Length: 141
Image (cartoon, rainbow, N blue to C red; front, side, top):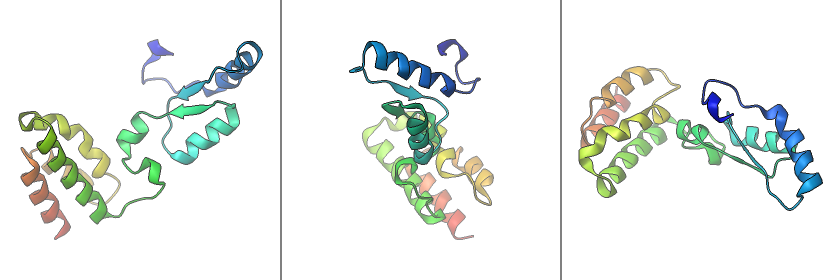
C-alpha cells in the first residue's frame, strides 16, 4: 500500500482477488502490478501466477541496468557502461549536477571482488573523465 512505502514487501497475494473483481465488473480494464520485482523471469512468473495484465518495474531496473536483457554482463561490459552513462550525462545533462549521477554507480559496481572499493573511488569522481580513469585503473589491476 502507498503508506507502507519501501519497507514492506509487495502484497502479491491480493492480486488474484483484484483480477477476479476486475473480470466480474470491468473485464476490459487492464490491471498492472508493481513491487519487489528483481528480474524479468520473476515478472513473467508473477503475471502467470496472479493473472495480472502486466508488471511495472521500478527499482529492479535501477539496480540492474541489464534487467530486460536477461543476462549477466561481464566486468568489462559493466565498466564500459558506467563510462558511457557518465559521458552521456555530461553531454545532455548539467555537468554541475554530476553528483546526482552517483546514486546509479552501485548498479554497475556490485557483485564482484573489489566492487565496494571501486564504488568508494567512483563516489569521489567529479566528471566522466575521472570515472573513466578510475574504471580503467580498476580493470588494469
